[in-house]
Length: 115
Image 1 (spheres, helix red, strand yellow):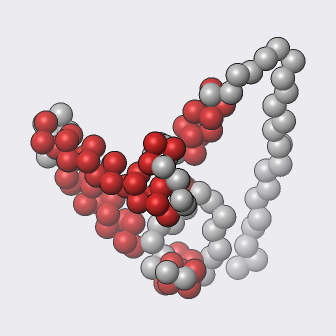
Image 2 (cartoon, one colour):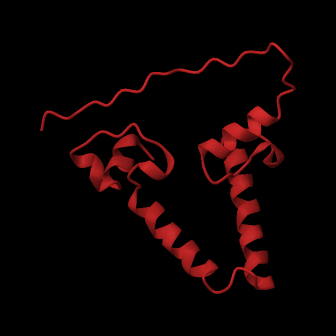
């Protein structure tokens, strides 16, 4: 799938360019359709054994597909709810020592459209 294919599936990109990520960006139509399908499936009762088992199976299948795409092992893939969770997992996995420094960027820039 090319970038132009993804743009065609994401109507908001016809008139704008987005550099946002995760929940703050427009989604391609197939992504929206899959989220709706997933929510309808979950809505049957996520505490029901057959629902949670199917959900866990789908999660593992997705981990395997992502791993294959980036040539990794499924055990190396974390499917978290957002980038912040992923950053926290990594940060908490580091053996921090007294005197270690974390460098953060204070750069935050909003670009206003001339339209």
